Length: 360
Ligand SMILES: C[S@@+](CC[C@H](N)C(=O)[O-])C[C@H]1O[C@@H](n2cnc3c(N)ncnc32)[C@H](O)[C@@H]1O
Image 1 (cartoon, rainbow, N blue to C red):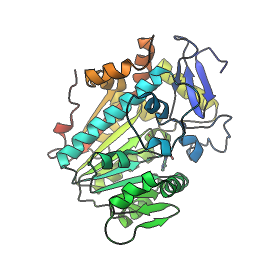
Image 2 (image 1 turned 135 degrees about the horizontal axis):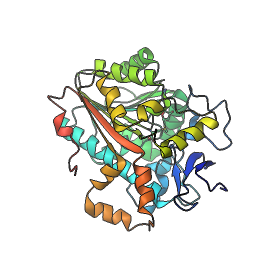
Image 3 (image 1 turned 90 degrees about the vertical axis):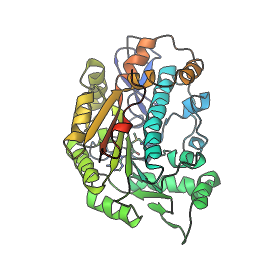
């Protein structure tokens, strides 16, 4: 890790932004493992996102180990990174997990869990298992990702009883359906599909009993930026047209046209890895606008600094005591480049209650 100027380096399969405003050790994860070290141009083509291994990296595994939040399942999907992560990074993950969790729980409460959740580009996400433990499972929980990722996830599920048992326990009726690229049980389904190929995606989800009449929560965390504006617009339009009542939570980069954001983008481009959806990540307004232009009735967006400042003070005090952070400014800079955006359809039933509670 020799670069000390503003720039980007590869380490542990993650692109990191180096800022001269802090110490050389203050590195920001640009994405959650979009590309491997020594990137192979074949893997970094803008149209096809990176191969499975590249996406499996951090997922906040280090932060969980230090105690920022609990996730007993992450261990079964992601190995603990060998090197220490900067506290800014762990606090960023914490803000994201808490922020998304807060919106998600508001939706589950509002619908009394009579709903479905579709996690788009879910990767190795463990939300299904955590909701089961909290007795908050929706009627059905779906995950979608590329077939290669799904195959890997299914392998983990099959080979690790703490992952397979909750699926079996929540399953009723006929035998559970499973092949290399999909698994379909009563409460959990994982589908190998490309989010840019909507007719096939729809067919596969319907085969797993996706119900257009149920209130539906769509979740996309660090996913849309890897799709062109047209592809993500089509996806948002498809969702808005498919479900009577829906909420979409999107977590990803924002403020990508300021200096810091541009450095992130330029450095990736110089390595032939373009974030093809970055134009929608220009600002909070551009994040909201794409929902409003594609069939959604309400859209809200906040940067992660705002989200962090709205989290319960006692828990924030707890996590801030876990690791010493000497430069708050660096944390703010990082948090201002990620956002939470949520949009609703059928706002008479869902919308206004989903406002960010506790906004200053
Ligand atoms: C950076 S990872 C985020 C994973 C997960 N959402 C999380 O936050 O841990 C992006 C994920 O989106 C998936 N993805 C990107 N484009 C996709 C597409 N067109 N179709 C299906 N999955 C896609 C990738 O395979 C990857 O698992």
